[in-house]
Amino acid sequence: APDANFARSARFHDSFLISPDEALEAARKNSAEKGLPEIAVSPAEGKLLHLLVRTIGAKNILEVGTLGGYSTIWMGRALPDGGQIITCELEEHHAQVAHENIGKAGLDKVVRIILGPATESLAQLQPGDAPFDFVFIDADKENNLNYLLEAKRLTRKGAVIVVDNTVREGRVADLSNTEASSEGVRKLLAHIKGDPELSATTISTIGERHWDGFTYILRL
Ligand code: SAM
Image (tube, rainbow, N blue to C red; front, side, top):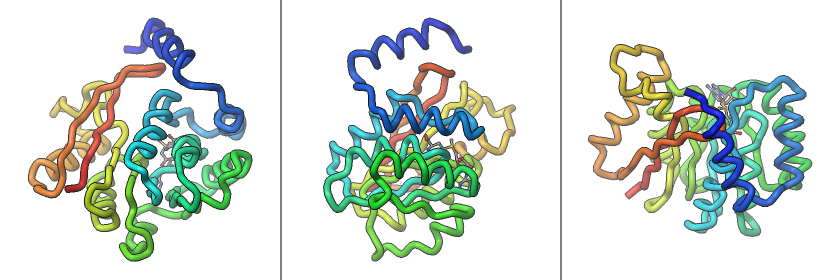
């Protein structure tokens, strides 16, 4: 359950480790003002995505689920010259707000937003277009497995795929819970178990909002 102590702890750590970034703060504010749901990654998770991108030296990134572009900007800030992000978003209003936020962050040449259901957008991408080095999956959880399979098709060996919200306050592990999102994560886990080309781990998180987690997948 949410607890003021978790939020205080997150803020304490962030205050040492995360320098203020005008564009990221503006993106959060603008997204809230334009009525987007407050479901972007936390600053600490955004920084983790940023560090992962730098650590593996990713140049081509794929994101599924743009919302207001908050995580997109975190990853965009980690790219070397010539790096690119393709990010897929279903809702036109979200994509419009993301476009504004990404523009303010000076990343409009780096980020391409594809509007529409991600299953269709991904199906149109070809591995030759850009073998992706890093994929962040954070959209409708019922399609997680489909997104993972597309990510596999479009990445190089050694690529990293991160899937967000794979714990859901323990609901994923509670088989009496039949929400489509929980089922979507279970299907993802079952696939990874049987796929010798993937190696993965789930890390539980508790931060400003609630108990959740992400699954970190290495494409072998
Ligand atoms: N990655 C964002 C961040 O951390 O700043 C948050 C993404 S939010 C959790 C999920 C987004 O996925 C929403 O903007 C939602 O409209 C979008 N979405 C939902 N279903 C989708 C679909 N079928 N195809 C593409 N995007 C979808």
